[in-house]
Length: 435
Image 1 (cartoon, helix red, strand yellow):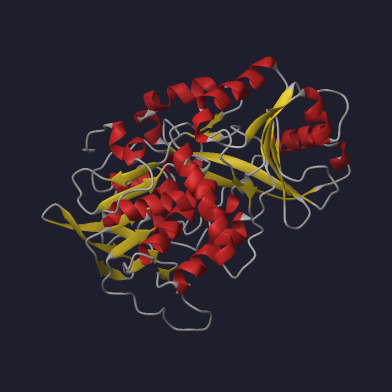
Image 2 (tube, helix red, strand yellow; image 1 turned 180 degrees about the horizontal axis):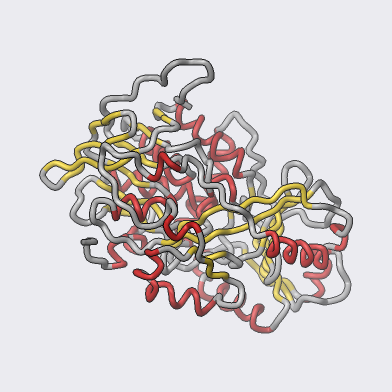
């Protein structure tokens, strides 16, 4: 990456112009830049901190089609294909493996949800299938029939996020993308209603197209120049274990614990949906938009107010010459929920007794950019010609990231998109410009 090397007096000169400037070095931004470069577009990607420093290296590493919302499943199918292709192209091992994914069902209601999902998505021709009680027991190496069945997709995959996204960035650089780390974009410059450039902490880059892929920072960036967007942040906590011998070759999800085998022989362990909803001023403004989500998950989602209320994700305004929140917080590193993770690990040991003597060796948390319907927002921003937003990946962005990037690149270049982008349009939220 192009950043300030240790021992030098100044970073490399900032490019003066680009066909497209991409803001954000997570999986969505890097993928967008890569696919733009493949179309002969000159691209500069600006990252305020380091590539994949936030949620793109802190997620679970699942690349799953199974369980996806019907609206995003076509894009996820394309993304799964792209991950396999990219893993073969890159010179680095990202521990990509088609090892399958399985959702366990302990209750009739859980099993029925899997049946309903299969029926709703039958036309996609996936290899997803229901396992019986006995098949589930054999799959888990058990014989106590604790589960009524499971939903299994053999073609789903995993990879190591902390390896995959930086490797993808280096792959993009090799194809012409200019990546500038430790360089925050403060705002967008407009001329006659159209984007004309970006103002970074190191100067201006002239460009008539900008892609905002800023993760949890996207809402504040948009609000700073008058665009209201109902995106909030939730904190997800994760741990990894020491190496262990467990009959778990693929990703497994259940109500109380989800687990994925790692390249190092350990396991990534977390709980689906058990997130901490960050109470900031924007949460009150968009509260009605999020009521359905909160009602559905009130038993497993915490609502927390604290220093983040007026912190970097809070409400603030700044000018092009001011130090922005993105410079004050280069890499958002929230504190993991230790109490939650202790409970999650307890359930992991109940699922796989082989983990009983295996200790967690690391825990971390990440901030997830979520929108009310939990479907990515990919498309132009009304009233700002040349600005495309790519955000709201809502906790399943790693797997769908390459597909999101390809779709965004096609929207920017006017190419026929791989899927109908209507479901992802930011305009679906129908918000007026902020005062």
